[in-house]
Image (cartoon, rainbow, N blue to C red; front, side, top):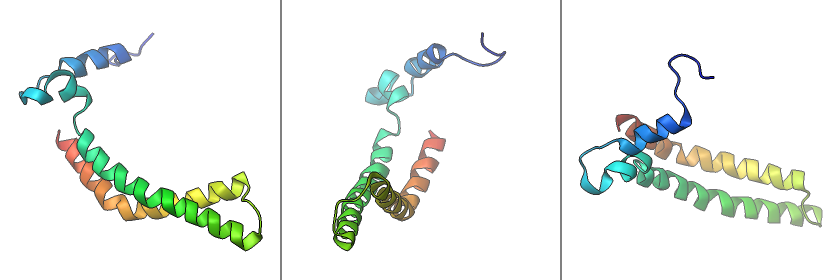
Length: 104
């Protein structure tokens, strides 16, 4: 059973789908479920373009340094460093995205 005042996933989904914002194409399902999708992509795409090439470069350099393939733990370490750097670089985009989503 649900606690008093809480909503179920189905009731939340019904509310989002029934939301109308008067924007024509952006109303109904698109307005409720996909609102802010473009601004989210504007943050995610630069992050991915920074993170994945850095991850691959870090792995290559580590393999050169030790003379054999990286272990899964070493690959995870490379991914962590690459993700941290990409996150630091794209944080301003995340702040913009969050501000935009709050105003919706």
